[in-house]
Length: 228
Ligand SMILES: [Zn+2]
Image (cartoon, rainbow, N blue to C red; front, side, top):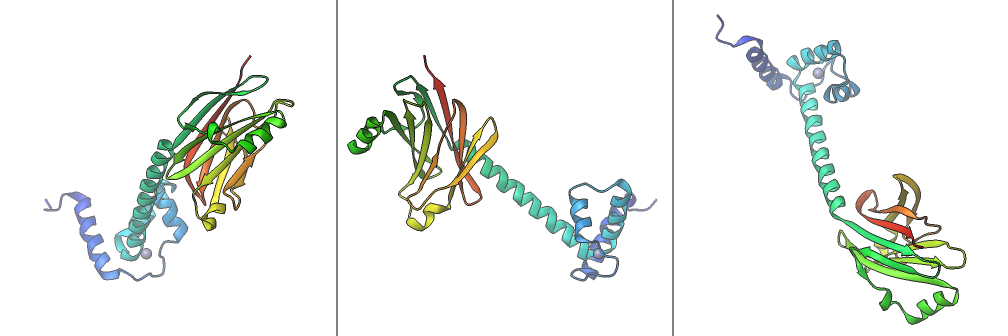
């Protein structure tokens, strides 16, 4: 009996030997990048996989590439799960009801700021037979104000989201996407004033996802109910 316990130990020794011998050098017959990708993501057939395994036994260069890709993928997955967690912790909910003449806040995890609105703003809105509410909340260190406008003549509803206390150059980097029933309806960048406006919001569950460049920071769940 060999003192090596079967094939696995011999493979380990061989791998280590060739890793030292050929590390950093590619040679004829080395694995193409797309083959390494498929190998790491488990998309190769059993037969193809065996070929790669055989090559990795004798090629430190490719083995290094495989280990590096595996480590990178692991890192990305960890980052994704951190991002996902922080997005779920940054949900700001506003539930509002609409009668024929007015908007009512049913519940919110934010701060109701309608009373702090500039009198001219409210008066201007009222003259046009509109109602308005403002609710504010912090999402991932971004202070948001959400204004909901309601045209009591036509029944049209609009939402205006403002990012506050953000330096001028950073303001247009925010993106808001409006979803209804998990379908993306509209995407808008905040303007130089830090504002994005969505017209014709419907009753039901609306979700506004806030991104800074490509990274999702959090969500505003906007639930609009028709009251009788
Ligand atoms: Zn190779």
